[in-house]
Image 1 (spheres, one colour):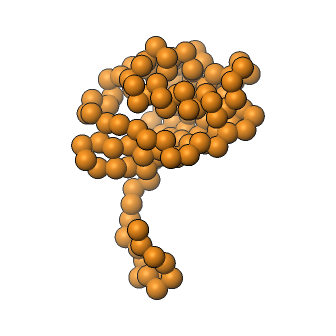
Image 2 (cartoon, rainbow, N blue to C red):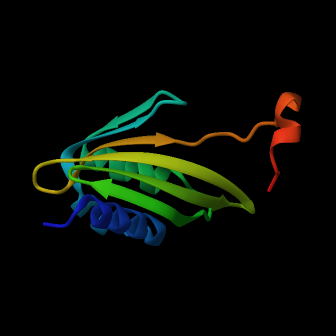
Length: 125
């Protein structure tokens, strides 16, 4: 059985390739996807695959920045490029006993302006 890091790396590789068969093999039949910022929830493999295949129609691309995984949990930081804009994504994964992904919690933070009170304390990049 693969570890959490390897499963999540395979998940993002399948997503980038739009290989929905490979992605489907990595999630449980009753996988639960949640997007807390938009309060989206998708239950089940078929619904989750449809959500990905039909829900994002632009020519987006993903680049994995970091994956941290141990035991049955993993977290990833990705960057999605969509029509020239880059968005950071943080995603948390819970794996079932068989090593497939049972729960996905996805965050897409929006950038915001630096508060004036911290300008003298930081270097912008």
